[in-house]
Image (cartoon, rainbow, N blue to C red; front, top):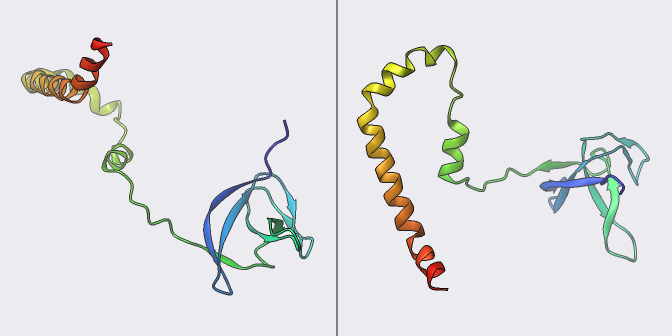
Length: 132
């Protein structure tokens, strides 16, 4: 199977003010307007083929200047917290056994809370599964 030519990166605004899809080249392409090389991983747009209406002809940024729109979608709080967490250093783990002993009681409480939360969320589904 042949390697894909491009992938959609997002939306952009052309210099004329119109909105357009922005693509990333996955292999070198030629601009359909000027014949310039669109390098691999470079951003470009596509223009319509006359008479067909499909946007398949690549255009480099020189021929069709655009600005990439910012993606304003909010990420979930869980995803943000996972991305924000720092990786633990090996040097910080030296006193980890001492810290574990002092927080053993709170760890058991946390484990109990997690078990209760899992049962609360999965309980109805588990009950339905047992009836069938």
